[in-house]
Length: 164
Length: 164
DNA sequence: CTCCTAATTGAAACAGAGTTTCAATAAGCC
DNA sequence: GGCTTATTGAAACTCTGTTTCAATTAGGAG
Ligand SMILES: [Mn+2]
Ligand SMILES: [Mn+2]
Ligand SMILES: [Zn+2]
Ligand SMILES: [Zn+2]
Image (cartoon, rainbow over all chains, first blue to last red; front, top):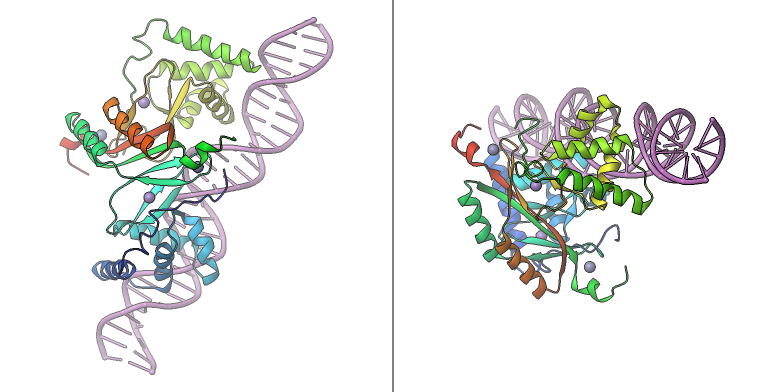
């Protein structure tokens, strides 16, 4: 499996959505004001990088991309945490167990199909399935906060070329 | 969240199943012979500990329990890996992100409801849900090898005492 | 614009799970 | 018993994630 596989999120989620980048930046500023935080060049860069690179990025991916612009690892870590609290960003636990981040604003919840061969991540929505999940949890007296449903296997592309 | 929460697997899975311990030990030996590995006291102890303690144990839980009998951390690590390859043991990703292990032989597939408050793990089978998963994956041309469906929230016990 | 203060930053050090290395040890076979 | 090879475990290392704290900066008050 390639070390940095093609980890696309809904292609053109940001791009295909007029004003999306604008809106998420505004929501970001709103959150900053509301919580008494400050707008710094680092925080701006990190959000912008997430917006322009439509992929599932790890903390380290972002750090490596922005260190040349003087953004530290710790700041990336803290900013991602803050963006998650602000519900502007979310994370997936990828194959290796590390967290990968994606913009969340206006995006519906989805789960991931992870190809063990090429490392590619496909996104999937199955409200029908989640309805059953919620129903069963309810009958067990378990109140769901969030869930992680990750399916591992071979994507259509890799299933054809059956070479290991 | 308590550091070592009550992490029960199906109560009496091993206990309520006459000869289970016996069968899994035999399967273990078979695997050793088949792959040219050797039966050591350490490997025996680790498997036995998993069998007698019907819980979802972390690598460290097992190490802490067996170090007094002269079993090293590395050996626990390697043995768990081997047991997973032999399909005798499986792991769950618990609340903190660490792996917890459980015996697998003859046990039906199940998923986990993980309480973020007390750390307790409940097991759940929902074939209906998984049927939908497989159906949708199929239509997407994705061939499922395995999946991990973990639901985080509050168990019934913790939901009542609403203290944080 | 300047000053002030509290928020922010990032190097460094730390934590914890997981993994490799390698010399010493033990299993299984003759 | 003796030989060969797998196994073991201390130590060192990797990687992700996290805390600490002195230096820096945002942004509001003057
Ligand atoms: Mn996604
Ligand atoms: Mn289980
Ligand atoms: Zn693939
Ligand atoms: Zn609970």
